[in-house]
Amino acid sequence: MSHPIPLKRITLHLARSKEHPDGSSRHGYEFLAPLTAEGRLDPVVWRDARAACRVRRFWVGEKEETGHLVHRSGGKGGATWAFDYDPAATGDEEAGYRFGDHPMVVGEYLSVKDEDGEMHTFKVVSVTAA
Image (cartoon, one colour):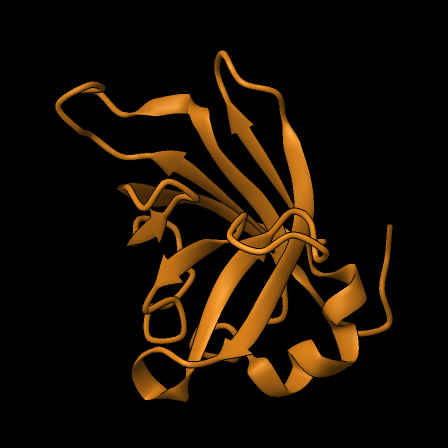
């Protein structure tokens, strides 16, 4: 589906960890977001495209979840990026650790704190036009 504002489809796979020494392509996220020329999430463009900034969480053994990429006040630099699966519920968000500081480019590593407060590291495996 095309959107008038150019969005990128970003795919994250679980990076190497004690439980997954080779990482895992069966654990991750795929989301749509506007990026700056440097590959960083663009909060200004996001405001106009927020309804199209969807996320899909895939985690082997768990039900797939879909939601939105959200940008909220608070956190380092005054704002936090998160994945929100139910806007009516509190506490189901998964916050991206310093997502605004990291470029969304293939090979970069990013961390996401899940709804249980556990931090997981992911590798950007693809960034394509949405």
